[in-house]
Amino acid sequence: MYDKILIPVDLSSTNEAVFSTVRDLGDPDRTDIILLHVIETLQDDEPGEMDDFYEELREEADAKMKDWAAMIAEDGFEVQAAITYGERGPEITRAADENEVDLIVQRSHKVSREDAETAVGTVSHQVAIFAPCSVLLVREENN
Image (tube, rainbow, N blue to C red; front, side, top):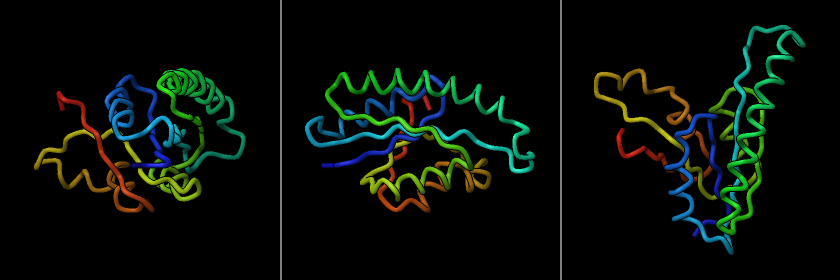
């Protein structure tokens, strides 16, 4: 059983398979869930240059995160929602380490043999390699 599960989410509607998997793996009486959204920042922007843009992204993320947290909490889980800025892979692994999570559960797409070389370096690959805990990659049934 897991005490703390981290769910990195994007803002698409394709996270339901991950939420369903976490409900099956967790125990509402024991498992805390952390939803994490990372707003990817541009590395070459000047300080303050993109503040309005990042604030719009944060507002959109905050609304979705609150909805998802409430939905998962209806099943009895303690849920924390967090939004951070930076590169997704390193931020996800940092959050997992800082929060001492037992498991990261995130969405991943199927990679064909032809695309295998470009799959190295994807966010899910980075997280799977560098995470301080176990990682479960979830694919939707039609992938």
